[in-house]
Length: 165
Ligand code: FES
Image (cartoon, rainbow, N blue to C red; front, side, top):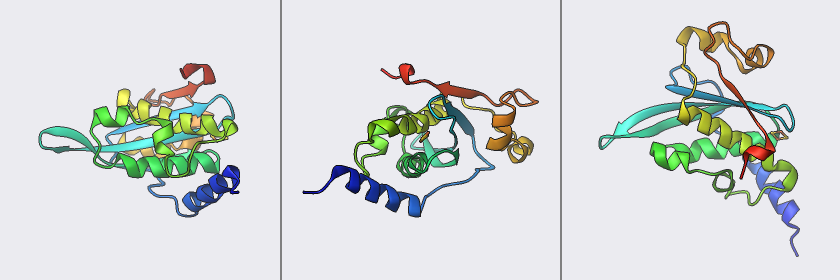
């Protein structure tokens, strides 16, 4: 009988071997950055919107991660799923749905999915105001070193396990 952990690890490795949409998006309309209190990892999500039939939808999404490989794999899958979604549909996208392809996350990795979900929510809710000249300078590394950017534009949300229902 297949060990579910082996199957999860194999699918995770497949997702990690070719992550999609990794990197900054200089023309992003909104950015969400979240740090996990569980492990100190961070993830930033970039969203670009467009309009279709008079409705605002997500044209594309990308991410930067100072996180574990699970977070990278989930963010990769999530950014693929987000293309063409309405804001309402994206707001309803849960970590469980993002990981449908690899199966349920083991308990120690649940916060990795919550971090990706949190970065998406942050980008959708209010997000950070992208500053074309500051995106280059405000890397994830500088955000960690200086959570309040000089211009005060970068908001970092720390997720805690108890934030989840
Ligand atoms: Fe912290 Fe995965 S171990 S995000």
